[in-house]
Amino acid sequence: MFVFACAGALGTWLARGYALRRQLIDEPGERRSHSVATPRGGGIAIVAALVAAAAWLAWRRPQDAPLLGAFAVGLLLVGGIGLLDDHRPLSPWLRLAVQAMAAALYAGVAGAASGSLWLAALAFVAAMVLVNVWNFMDGINGLAASQAALAAAAFAYAAGGAWAWLGAALVAACLGFLPFNFPSARIFLGDVGSGALGFALAGLLVAATPRNGAVLGAAWLALPVSAFLIDAGLTLLGRLVRGERWWTPHTRHAYQAWARRRGHSRVTLAYAGFTAVAAILALCAASLREPVFIACIVLAWYTCGALLWRRLRRSA
Image (tube, rainbow, N blue to C red; front, side):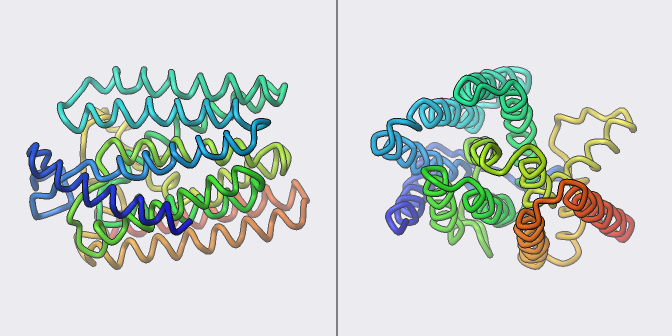
């Protein structure tokens, strides 16, 4: 895993130099949470590391090659359209269409490999949701990459086998990227990185589900990514109710409001603590294997998270 951490760090350093030469810069503005012009596109290093890891695992474990191949192709599609958008803004509907293609490809192979239409549906929905949630929530230093690393660790533990190694590679690549993005940002993930992180987590989630059963699979989805799902979901719902253009950049998320008062580092660490507790709770729930009890834990956790979100928004 040290190799993938080094690949993440070296790739991010190279991406920063490229972004500076090509003037791929995010300027401060009223719809952004940073105050200094910063290059973007560092997430391409994580994409490259993950594709390399998936290719190596497919070679070593031919029985997993079809799903790993679909994962790698889907990741390249999501990362590729994000990379183009980092160079020149694209239509959100074009990005959504490419993301849907990637999700459908992975879902189709996952469904064929498992013989489960339910798993195929879960793969498509998880990919579409997490790709866009990670894009929405990538707004302050270190937040998206640290949350992805924590969730990936939980999903890797749940998945086992080749997918545990792929999850570990994602954790390592994120750790290689983070020194360039936290506590101060010398480069941002960009759309190439944020969307790819969401797709990668969806892939790990789907791989973990058959081993743990339908209810436990839902628990893995709900708990380790709850911080982002709560903030993104409730914020999006509020924007829809107000009739706003929900796909445009904004600073209405709870983490953005909190960061304006407390600074990026404190918010990123607080979200990390929340997710670490959620991941531990998921592990405890999984060990019990009681569907009703797991459902109650998930409901209680999300209720507490929603109340916390409301408090943060009201104190903004």
